Length: 473
Image (cartoon, rainbow, N blue to C red; front, side):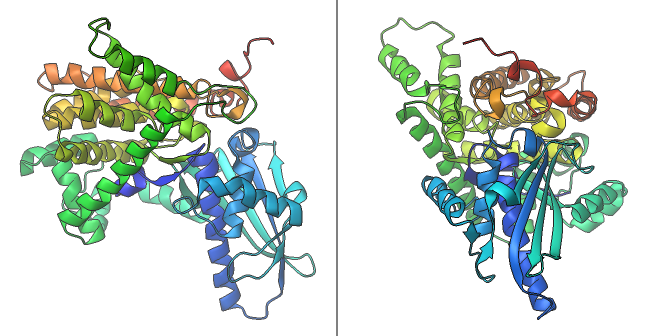
């Protein structure tokens, strides 16, 4: 299953790729389906009202993740990549005031968020922990169209039918998958990735670049421009997070800390008073800057999710500003390599906290960043695979239990620690020759199995763990 660099790294907004960006994308897709249905059956009935219900983790932590706002904005016709986050609150307020929406091409429809947007706290839908059902009704109150969507992590959305088709496709033989793909290097596992690298003499980044150019039918120069845009949005997010201060929204009264820490680090530069481990503080502050922006609903890049959006940008900034010999080409190599690893993890396991816990989010991000940094610093394919395995292995079992359903505690600090682990894993791998005991494929499968066995209350429902063990006020 080919996953583009731009599937793994998507420009969007906070606070959650699966709970905010995904539902918005689903709602926008529903509008497209409605328009298509109206064209197929003219005069079948006058569309008058829309409804939605959130299920599983989307219901339990939807308020904290602004899932209701995301659905409203999606039904207006907005999509994550083009929405101005500064306008979101005003747009939502207008719908709540008028109880009506006017999506392009569908006229004005009734939609009262208080009654037409239901948080269903019953059992989750069978396909995935993040379920969303959207409905359209005619003038007599009869169902006009109903569609079930699943937000499967990282902003990816599939319909119920697409989810079943995906499961069927995964059951096909590897040969069939390769024949269907038609890409120069169709690796579906880390073992295949390494074997193709040995046979071709190409690095992981070079193979990923060739696949991406074939996928988009573009020249490498155009691909580099697109990757540069992703990097620039990541970098701008770090910069904005380092400038901003104040209290994050949501009711926990969590203060932004990145700016103050960054100012301390700048003041200590060159005075010979810094401890050797200060590099960890730089990594943490870069990651925290991104995740404070994410928590505030700012513009971020899924890496591979919003909840883990700070790890890869932090490691890139660390590479550019702190590593000897850093180059622009090195950044591209880092992102291409990271996306290859992220694609393997999503295809063979999950990047969804609601499905596999935070091991699938920050753990995956750390593996991606570690592999990317190892590649940018000249590591071999075998060392890169080892770096990813080390980083992922030491996140296994990590739960997703955010306080109040907000992507703040422990998520913001956790990204900093994920970045630190990524750099440590890359450094360890570069000290070796790439041979190691546990293959990355086995580690990914262990993560998947661990996620299946993990109690639901530790998988982004905020029903257990840190989310319920809050200090008394």
